[in-house]
Image 1: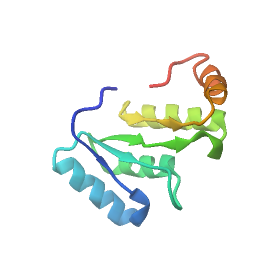
Image 2: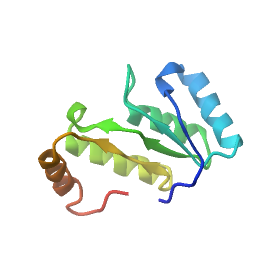
Image 3: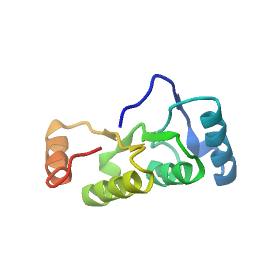
Image 4: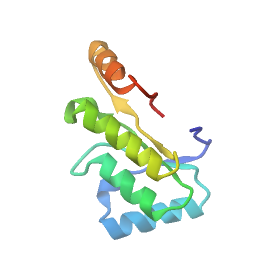
Length: 117
């Protein structure tokens, strides 16, 4: 997936579900190519991404970023595959790490049979 030049970085946790979907639709109508949602306070970015993807038609969604220490690697990569498939490949998972060894281990597990999209 190629991200365009115009994207919105949104604190999606600030919205309830209905208003978050409406805001994402507005961002899409404004001509933004993508929306980035962080893992911050109170909400899982993968759940937020699935809600945005379900309520928009062309908007790309990316985590900006999801913390690898907060989730199991197999569950994370499986969620990434499912969201990419269900959204026709407009979901981008960006992971945050602090230790290169942990990232290397995660990359080996998650890219054994398929590459991250």
